[in-house]
Length: 332
Ligand code: TRP
Image (tube, rainbow, N blue to C red):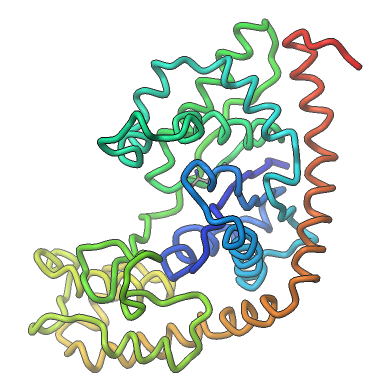
């Protein structure tokens, strides 16, 4: 069976954007692929993380993944730093990837900002660690959003150069798995800004742990414009709030945006919001309750992660040894 690897940064406060953009897709992949899902805490520390918060966010994100329906028996769910092969292979890839390749990464440029000199070396080498994540398991497919396509391309370049340099046919050239039109979930207070965990207004986002009342209230209070809802997506021009709310409906209902417009076009926002709130509560509130239940049972979550790390290591160790042999590292 084809193997999926995917990672999520454990940086807390998960919201609807994380759910629709990543976690929900993981749940759907489980039946068709052999799946390995990783909380990438080593990626998280490429920028400063408070140590206590990192521990709790790692549990929190794992809990959300489980609450959303990832089955830790069918799939492997684990924490990156618990499997040493990620760091070990990343070092090899630091020596395969070229500075010029990494210099082209747009995410580094965005994240480092003007003060490049002060960015961590880890932030620069981030895509090499990501390639290690994937290739340590010889994953064949990686579900990616738009923002990670360039990094995945780099994983392919690294695999190719490795195979070439060492004259082996060892590392697979991974394929991206793109999910339909990406759902870009925007802030409920400003349809032009991405929904974000760092927005000071909690009303701007639906958190995965929000209960039914909170979800309904935030949708009722969401920003609108004075017009009736458009009958086709062309009508979203200059109407980011309408686009966002109808887009969220489409994603939650698994409907095409055209069909959502056909159904609710000409409605007033207030009436549509009632429908959206009902749908969001139906789809999200049980996940939220389960998240909270798992938060209160950290022993269970830690156990799932420990088991996941053991199973991940069992796959990774022989592959890392093959790679070390190819490089010429003396066997112990
Ligand atoms: N870089 C990814 C992100 O920020 C997370 C990630 C790390 C990842 N390793 C990965 C995603 C491997 C897919 C495969 O979203």
